[in-house]
Amino acid sequence: MIKRTILFLLSVFSIHVAHAQNQSNALNGDSIFYQMKKVADWQWKNLETVGWKNPKKDWTSGAMYTGMMAWAKLANDETYYHKLIKVGEDNTWQIGKYRHFADDYCVGQLYSQLYTIYKEPKYIADFKALADTITQLPHTEGLEWKKNIHLREWAWCDALFMGPPALGYLTEATGDAKYVDKSVELWNKTTEYLYDKEEHLYYRDSRYFNKKEKNGAKVFWSRGNGWVIGGLVRVLSVLPKNHPERKKLESLFIDMSTKLASIQQTDGSWHASLLDPESYPSKETSGTGFICYAMAWGINNGLISEKKYLPIVSKAWLALTTSVHPDGKLGFVQAQGAAPDKVGYEDTDVYGVGAFLLAGSEMLPLYLNHKNNVLIKTVYNGTATTKQQVIALKWTAITNKIKNANQKKVVVRDGATHALIPSTIVYKGKKPQVLKFTVDISAGTNRFFEISTK
Image (cartoon, rainbow, N blue to C red; front, side, top):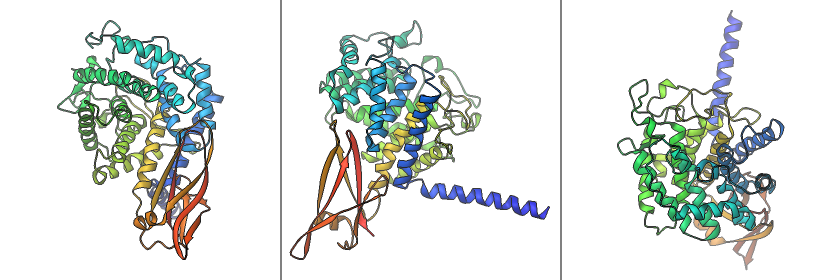
């Protein structure tokens, strides 16, 4: 009995040590990068071996592509872009069957973002034809959930992730402001109808206005509000700084972030029901992923306080990474639906992976840019070909950021993988003038370089 007790205690101790190690490693740059790679690679392998549960034009797939695009931008490996281009080719670059149904043109986000890199007109031709029609329609119908209104208007909160960013990224691709302007106009219409100004949360659709949870609270769905705040920052990311509606959307983001921060659970996640978390006691990774993504973006872009929100997104990222199976499968993803529901470790779906990868894409620069005594250099190759680039940094830029910088101890590392990168220092006499290093940057890739002392 004593032996069994000792073995049991050792087992418990090991679990606690492993958990502590996970906590300490959660915000290592290489840990974030490799967690993203692990999840992305598992998902592609699963799709290739098990098959696609839903069509490649479907909203579930479209949501996954948003994260896969974010990962491809960081991976420095054009293989991931090739996989996404193959999706477009399989779809013949068409949107879904119901052309004015936001779920069926969520895939337009993928097409527009690929176009910004590869400049192939066929990528956006069909989606642009639809978007041109959308910008001309009056959109005067009410948003009550009846008469298939969802096929014509953004009458449910999920649509705010599917539709507005698709139009916004088309503006980024074409330079034509009418698409993002229309997205903001229709965003405001949906917000006026579905946003609860007291709770600072969105109802899923009009059917939920009078529904209550078991504890008597209003029904606000975690993933539904994740769709909203995730879609909101994607629109803000392409909205001009001087746009007349920008301040209004920024205020909405701040209000939602404040509310969501106040109801984060002790496990770091947001449970399926935001105001009745005990009815659905497990963490839920799709809603948590989108919320983590949005808040990390908000910190990175100066809209919300680092001091307040960095602990929140760090806990959320830990909740996400501890939901990843050893083989890379992401668990605790609530099944497709329209309301809070139960979820478990084995539950997964592609949109959850999209949320996870989006979150990681903002957590990586957030972690790097808040390191002490380190200079981070960001380099983006927005072209369709791999480039070898010589990076030159003035020595004064380094000494301004790194205390007691010594040319014999300064090193350059890949911010994502932590791999050492050979560098040289150019001198004028005995004084260091410039730090140089040469790197290959794949098409459409954003790379971070960390300059620090040994």
